[in-house]
Image 1: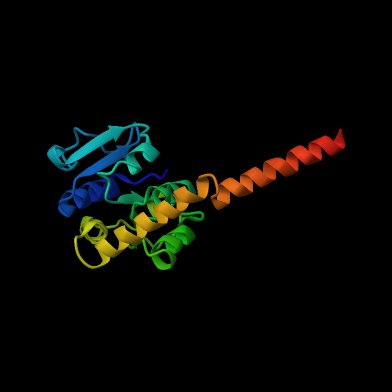
Image 2 (image 1 turned 90 degrees about the vertical axis):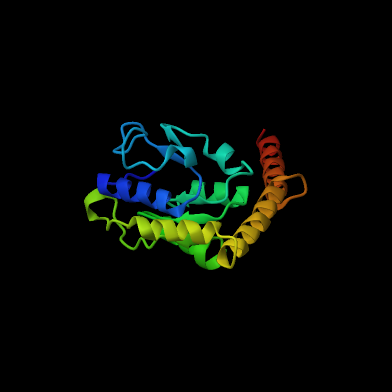
Length: 189
């Protein structure tokens, strides 16, 4: 979860509009942007949720072609597991490292150009709507980077989900841990 200044919210709205792509936008209740705000993109291309949204459910819907994310670890894992490429917008904490993982290591994302690490609204440089739109179009484009990122994201999603199934590495590791804990409990008495 991250907070944007009113100016940044207007630029995000402009970026969504300029991208020409359909979108689902989750806006926190009481946020500076609302569905009645004239700066919000055309309603016929987007769906705005005010308040909590079922992110995992949304990311796993087949119509989702990309995810604009602050690169929190949970959101990053959810997008990778869903096989969805990302537009990365880190703000602070581990988010810049997570962005490097998504963009440079995994190759399933494009950054919006966020460079300043700070948790206060006033200290963040405002990212222009054009830059946001360009990043969205790159991730969701039908040629070059976009197709390659989406293909790689789908492959990673299959691998991540496979790790959770019986015989997968995560499944087996949790099973082994449970066996060790039960054995230790039995030996303690």
